[in-house]
Image 1 (tube, rainbow, N blue to C red):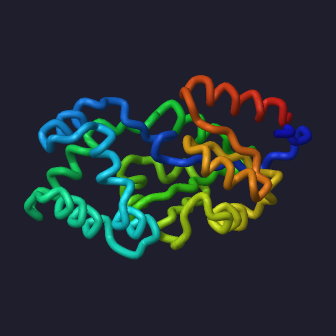
Image 2 (cartoon, helix red, strand yellow):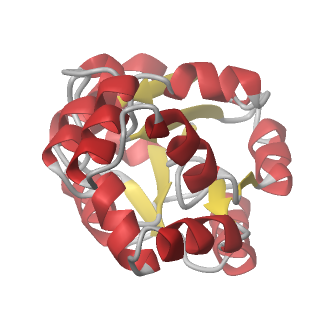
Length: 208
């Protein structure tokens, strides 16, 4: 990908899950999987890779309805939904250093979140003191569009009033990076936190 000319960037967008919030402690989810007679990856798929998750990500059903569907598929009593939800996410940790860096980008750059997430995401961001790091929150469940659909990137650009070539996007999934690049954004795939942050810093430093 060609690096834009210095001074070209005006906005930096980030994904949330797998980038800003990551599973730093795998033990709670591992123990939950063992108790359910599943592998870690099987449990992940049972929560994220199914119709109810996809519908919740588009705002078609609530987060609670999705978890009710998860426990039903696993043959668990409905009362287990809240317990399972808590245990599943117990090891997820916000990266405070990255959040501080995002805040430091302003006012030189505008900041945005583009996240495929269920309807409770905004409340989570507020409760974790993350929401105020962004000028705009583009949450798939609220807008009815999910990455890598070109429309969600275009909406995010419109919200911050920038052109695709004026924007950088950081995400951990290759398909979402490809989606951003397809609309003309500069995109960095999140791998290791330090390496990705250094790549972004160098890009922005070159931006003048």
